[in-house]
Length: 397
Image (cartoon, rainbow, N blue to C red; front, side):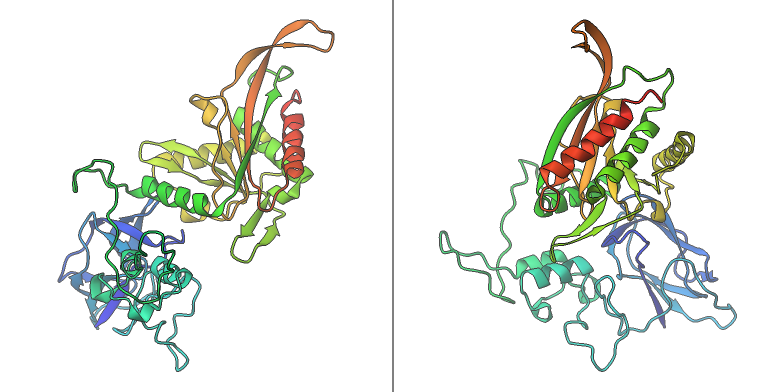
C-alpha cells in the first residue's frame, strides 16, 4: 500500500480546499496524471499523481479543507504501470508518516523525538510550542488522529476571573464560547480561498507588527500626458528603497533580527471577486517603465483568472496598495510580515494650491500613505523614504 499526502504547493500554507477529484476508487493512474484540483489562498492548483498505481481510497470530499501533509489518496501498487517523477507532491511514504513543521527533516531516525512522531499540522505544532504545551499530550480530532489548531486551543485552561493564572501545559479545558455576532450556527458564509488567506494575514499582522503611517501628497503637475501611473509608482518605490534601504527588508519578530535586501520585489494587491490576490513584481529597480507595465498586466490578468503561479506570490520585500484606482484618498495600509513597509496610493485629484509666486493654481496630486513597522524603522527613515518617492513622482517623465 502506498499513500500520498497533500504536499506544500509552494505557498507555505497550512491547508488547501478540495475543488474536484479527477479520479475515483479503482482507477488506474500513471505518474504525473492529474489527481485532483485544490484551491489555495491564491490559486486553483492541479495536483498530479506522484507515482503509478490503482486508486484504492480517496480522503476528502469537494469543499473539504485538507491540512498540508494530510492524507489524500491510498494506492495499490500496479506492476503494469511504470513509476515516474513528479513536479508537485512527495514520493511514497509508509503508514508511519508524520506531519512535520515547515523546514524540518522528514526523515524518522533514532534521534526522532516522541513530539516529532505526533501527527500535527504545522500551525498546531507552532501554537503548542508558543503556549508551552506538550503536543504529545494533545488528542487529535483530525483524520487519523491529526492534531489541529482547535485541538491545541482546547488544552488551554481558562483562569478564573482576576486570577491571572497561566495555562498549565497539557491540561484540558472547555473551549470558550465565541461571539458569532448574532449569526446562527451554520448560517454564515465560510471564508475560503483569498478571503480566508486575507483573514489569516491580517490576524498575523495585528499580532506581530507595530504599524505607524505617514501621509503626504505628490504633485504631478509636471507629468506629461498618458503617464502610466502604476509603473511610475513602482519606479518611485525603487527610488525610495535606494534612499532608505531599511524599508526593503524582512524582520524576524521572534529573534528581532532584520535582513536588508538588495533586490526590490514589490507585492501588488489585485482586487478580485474572490478577494485580494497579491502577485509580486520582481526586481523593479532600474527597469524601464514599459517593462514594468508588461509585468503588471501579466500578473494582474493571472490573478483575475486564478492562474497565478505560486512562485509569483511569495518572497516579496515591499508592498503596494493602489486603492485610489477605485476610491479613497488616504488609508492606513497593513504591513504583512516579514515585510516591514507598504505604500498606499490614493485617488488622484486636482487641488488648489499656491505656487512659488503666491498665485493660485490647480495641480494634479496623488495622496500617499506609507505604513511601516516601527519596531525596526525610525520615523526619520520612513520620512526620508517618502521624500525620495515624492521627488521621483514629481518628475515630468
